[in-house]
Image (cartoon, rainbow, N blue to C red; front, side):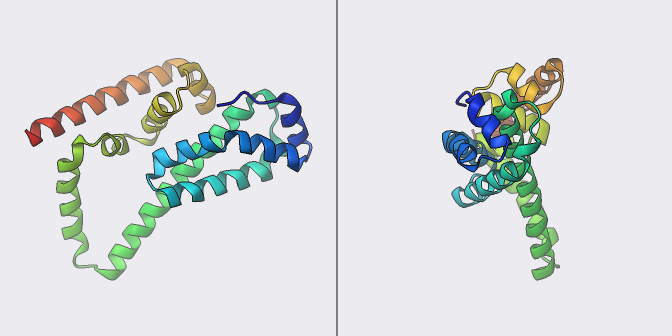
Length: 184
């Protein structure tokens, strides 16, 4: 992510809409990349980007440390992605239960089988990780952030980030290896 211009950040914190707009324009590609990695759909990713910009705009005045603008913005992006995924899963389950209550159990069994077959796909394997592990993998390998930067974004110790990353990589290796063995 582009280093933040502290003058623009301070102006944005004081209500400068033009400075805030410039900061967002400089980072919109990075916000979109994170959102797309989570959402896997252009439309959904764009919806998340809009939500991120809105949430950042209404809370930029509360930013206490201007130097952490990029970290703050990434945290908002990740949280919006996770919230959007939770909402879409709840909505999908609700619609499935309302439209086809007797077929919902059969669909769940089919989905379980289909997820085993598609285990080769890296995105599907990443989706199987818990949200903490997935966030670290996305920030490390899709945004090229250092572990120290990730620890700052997640507000947790560096050792915790390292442990979660190692566990996530181990799970991904296992999942991808099993998927490969099943397809051979």
